[in-house]
Image 1 (tube, rainbow over the protein chains, first blue to last red):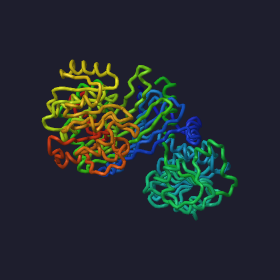
Image 2 (cartoon, helix red, strand yellow):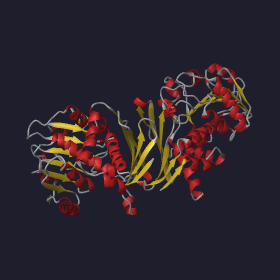
Image 3 (cartoon, each protein chain N blue to C red):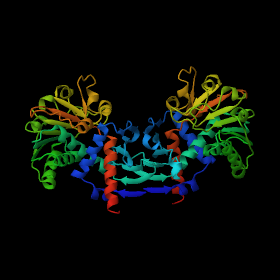
Image 4 (tube, rainbow over the protein chains, first blue to last red):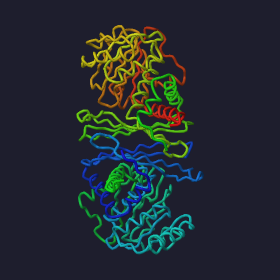
Length: 316
Length: 316
């Protein structure tokens, strides 16, 4: 059994094409019905303002499956600790024996979440998308844009965040780290006005994006909501967009954007199905497409396998 | 973060009164409504005849909660490996940080499962119970009897198993290891005929115990069924017994004995409630009592906390 820490893992796994391909392969397998993915196990620890989620999936034919444990304890910053944490365990899919423990402290979750945003844009955004709007100014606001560069030639970023100081800090960081020009906006509508892609990256409980904010041709990825109380998109966006996709229907209905549009009467596609079937749902530059991401166990199994294989190849 | 292996854990944790008290305290907290215990996460890996279960629970006020991962890969014996395996992780209930990893390979599950049987008998069997019948001749057939000695003065054992060679080996082992006389029987009815307690410890998919097998005054603990296909008790036992208890109603209905008696019209008690309220449901020596155990996350959190505190006290 091998044990790796965050630093070892971060040296081997980042936002690149190889990692993207592995996560995309996981989604494709899901779309082909080749994945066993049980519902998320979730436990609240109210007395500490904490929660813990456990996700898993097995991809048929893969040698290992991951179980990911993600604690989120939201009073931690007062103690000088990060809110999010966690680890992934890899097990042999043949014997059930523990193969490796990835003490990534949530790093691989950050990576696979950003890659899912890129995969959604790859299959739904315009080919010539250049301008990204981001709502929120946290870590995913940064990683989502970095990942999008793997699939589109991103040239400029427009950001809106409730806390304008954080938005300014984000703009500086994106310039320094990624060499991308960032314009700070005082509203989501203004940020989206000239964008080809908008990514919402907030823990908001009320919509941060309205239908009227969206220009023709934009692709929307909503990656913030992962529990029934969170909601980033005005439900009209789901009823009015030309295409709506999600990472997993059952999860989006239970804890994603579909949860807030229970009466939605339209076809909603799973991202994995689009990949598996090679379907191109965007048929014009004017269409508005939407993808809601809740985060799936198959992404975890994919990225954990990838991480372990890279770490092993290096003989660590 | 501390990491312990099976041998270290087994040196510190066994079937004794201290461990029993901790598991009983966990059940009592469950009975008082002080436990958060989500449904079990379960995944099948059909291609390897494997499954993996994840259980967890948090007991209010306790400093740590456990997440237990239990793989069961039933073709492993062909590879010279045990079918059951697994580990427990302990997390701070205040910060969600990993506290310790107990690579117990299923050892603590064996212990807490046997202790639950003893706790069931403590609260439901006759005080003067001396004779135990066991159906099945595996590890739990041994541990259940050993644990019962913590709560009753067990003097003799009667065993019945489908494989009579295993029953004979069990009889020898119990004599050598535990100094207990064991009589091997060719039927469950014969094994139960003079017993005060019977414990079923099989993975059977058809009942191994019939109502007509049970003498007056016996207490029945069924600990084998833990998925919807398993079934140890003829449903008539549940309808006809004087008292029926379970470790967790929702689990027994989903994957225990209650699953096979969906139309059951009677009060079924949770073991934790009996403990918390100090209720004594057995009011005569003639009553027949039953307890179905499916295995709960609160037992895991209790025994993992106990193991960690004993390991730490030793400064390992």
